[in-house]
Amino acid sequence: MLLSTEWELPPILVHRPTMRVVDGQHRLKAARLRGDTKIQARFIDGTESDAFVLAVAANIRHGLPLSLADRKRAAVQIIGTHPQWSDRRVASATGISAGTVADLRKRGGENGSEARIGRDGRIRPVDSSERRRLAADLIRNDPGLSLRQVAKQVGISPETVRDVRGRLERGENPTPDGSRRSRTKQHPLNLTEPDLGHALDRERLAVLEKLKADPTLRLSEVGRILLRMLTMHSIDGQEWERILRGVPPHLYGVVAGFARDHARVWAGFADHLENRATDLATGAIA
Image (cartoon, rainbow, N blue to C red; front, side, top):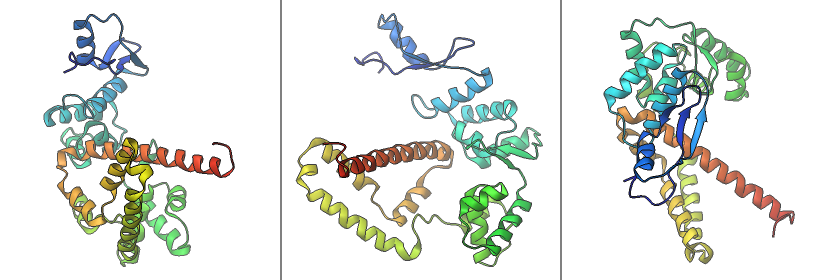
């Protein structure tokens, strides 16, 4: 497939200290077979163990997919070289679930440390029971505090604060005593507030129908592409729930990575449009 392409191949990933190709072996071979003398490359620094993590993360997102056994072996190696990483961070890099990473960690006899580094680079304790109790006290004393404000003061993630707040509202203990699986069952996906979800869906669909009737979009190729993208994402919370349940467990990390990447792209797209709207309103652009 690579040999049949006529356009320039995407850059390969190279570990600068060792000049080893981290990602792009097939592209490099294809370039050689085509007779190319040069290929674009992106260099990375750091340790070989860091380069290995990048190689695994790159290979689960494109090209020939790694088998589940390969991803588990990669997770075991990353746990050994990066024991301070959280289960979710290892899972994100290897395309397996955080629960599987936790199991692999236990099988390897890794007792861990008191704190681990998450995907966002922040250090959090493995046992967050005391911090959950502190978060609960803050929420009780000042219910108006945002999730991020409580999270910053206590040293846990905003999602953990959300869980604590939900438990308090239901009259439960802020510290869970069940397994991760049972906690997941207690908190189904809720992408919109229950009271507002249907109204927001109807309003969004009504706006979308108006956009579909706009000739400036309907009669242009780019406009039709945009309409298809907006239609694809204009589904209600129940449909999102159905899609969520349909994702195979061994692909949780991969799909989550794509979802976060796409979310960043959409956020950047929205920022550009809002900036253009501001510039247009002030006469900065024609």
